[in-house]
Length: 66
Image (cartoon, one colour):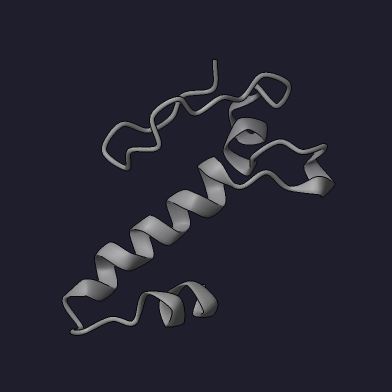
């Protein structure tokens, strides 16, 4: 998360919450982990580790494992 925050170079403290939300969304729903057999943590948690797909990487629409 520190790297994510540094890379986004926050201009104000108000941007912190939005930036943290985006970073956590990326880590949980978009970035596969090798220790999880290339599945995302969200897919494993939801029980769909084999076929987890995120068609629309939009924070407002949680990507449901299909």
